[in-house]
Image 1 (cartoon, helix red, strand yellow):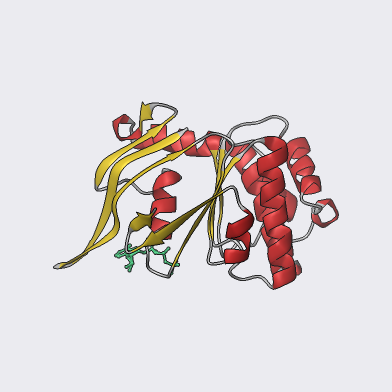
Image 2 (cartoon, helix red, strand yellow; image 1 turned 90 degrees about the vertical axis):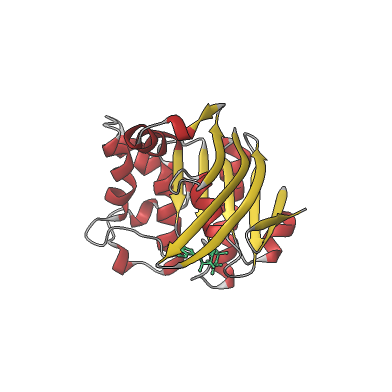
Length: 219
Ligand SMILES: Nc1ncnc2c1ncn2[C@@H]1O[C@H](COP(=O)(O)OP(=O)(O)OP(=O)(O)O)[C@@H](O)[C@H]1O
């Protein structure tokens, strides 16, 4: 589904140039559950951003379903992200003024989906949060917010979910719940899931672990 050929990403701050991802080649197959591990600063978020078509590489090529993404315009890329990619953030990134239900409906609303409400309610039920539909983020715990953000990422039935340190702000109990939910989405619904995590407990039970060091994958 996703193929990276010799992909690098460099950042330049004034005169200083740093290589965050260095010549990575990688294939992610449909239905895989992939864990990206590595020390802070090793390049996980940058690589994840490129897999989610948020960052563009400085060099190399990325193919999504055999399509070269460098040939697509920004609006075509945005359309692909909107329809096919769900993103889960470390800080949840729920809109504070919207209820849980409205937050989950929002991506469906952008897709002009007429069944946005029914689909959002179903997604909230999938993560055990239907009773919290009318709550705003500040009325929920971190674990509850992350469950809502998983529902938001999943409600549109994306092909790919990427999660950047989704449990970094959670205790061990909620960490386990979040991992179970992501595994369930992968196993029961066939969504391809790529997670950046420091948590080696989860990485060992995942189907495939990729270790990063200094911008490169350690084989
Ligand atoms: N926007 C940016 N501008 C300049 N340098 C950046 C930028 N984003 C990341 N970097 C640098 O790229 C390298 C990789 O960063 P990245 O965030 O991808 O690592 P990470 O493994 O996800 O780290 P963490 O686990 O701490 O989130 C780091 O050296 C970082 O300082």
